[in-house]
Length: 578
Image (cartoon, rainbow, N blue to C red; front, side, top):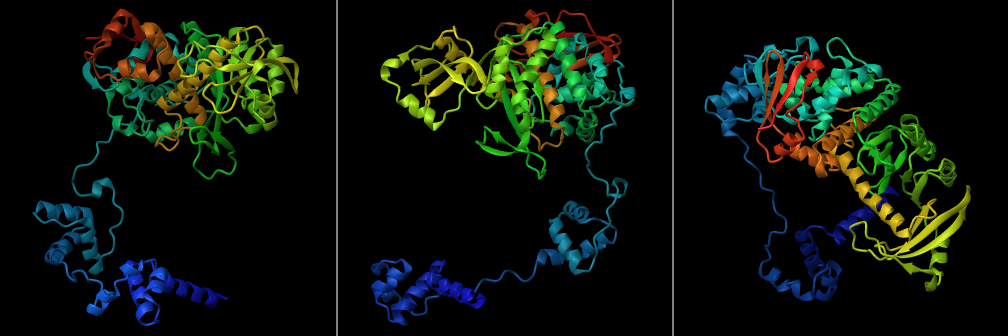
């Protein structure tokens, strides 16, 4: 059987040549040796009869169909000329890189690869791995000190930092107060790096909109970043990656609850309508225990960690999150959020907006029993679509949607009251067509008296909110699981909540359109700013560079405040805004 397969593949090789010269040769051979006509030979090998050009071959019978491959040089004069010097340097225990640099300094160019080839041909073995003290003198990266709060130097001096904008958050963190919150949540710490300092280091990197934490080693010598955290230097990436693994799972709910209460006391406004959604954080490893979830931006299902997010529609801030949601728990997450909100504020949310896959009809009935308004979508079945198509035109009416910016503002609707399985009461269904979608959209709500236009406008705004959620996740780099700082998703999600609310507090204090501006916008205008920090006996003076938006900070009173930073020796913070 194997010989038959081999014969078939060999036959295919000659009858279906892949190389152009080979194909021309087989076509001419089939005509001249096998006796095929020009037409048949050309058809077999994909030529036209006119292009076969038999006469050209007859005029030049020595045409080189089979070319002898050209051989490269058999000697390397440059390497041979330097062979003696290479051997002499290796006898001094120089590595191939040291030898290459030494030859370059002497005016000879020879790559480390060429040096290695010479040494192998002479029978030299590889050098054993050496410590830094055994290597030849040369330029090496500067090694930063070990992070230790006991080594924090607050003596008078001047510091230049790229992270000047982070100091705008210090009054907010002091007012919360940050250190006490972390202590009450029982986060792990040590004498060298207490819990509050560790979490503040991670939060600083989360607040600064750089490409995740993978570049933290580039900033390890920035004293401004270390001062923000209250340390002598920012912890190295190994500590940051390991710290989230030390946090017990029970700490996160405690921290989220205490953080929520502290933000309310700090004046963060709360809305009444919330957009709920699941977000899949992709996983690219081989963990067999992870489930597959739908990833919207890739339009496919893949292994990942499912996170539940609640987004305040008015203030545009993440107010609740839970990671590692399993498929059998998905439908209950909406009630978990309702319970959280009720315990923290004393009342249930007024309105919840979500899509059809977030929960079940039985859970909608539970929302109705708690008198919570909701707007969601109904999944479209073929039978349902056929029934909609059979509805007479006289049953439809056209409305105008004015509260959103979109091209389709005059959809046709079919406003009905229907019954659903597992939902004991009548529920309102609004069928929407001519709204920019190929198929009809089916809106479900328990708001029986609200006008259809207002309901459609509110759900249309949710489409924009989904973009805000994606933008927030992207800005706070929550999807970047492949970065050098491999944090656990639960820790990353909690830091995202904290950073989102801090940006919103900052925007509220600045006022104007910044009250609802995206974190990315606030970062660009205010946080991404270099500064000079002057440490005095009693003050930490942060002088910002002149920027177009500094007058807004002056108008908000950032320069005129009396704040003492507990983790900086209770020195008074002064912000000079140009």
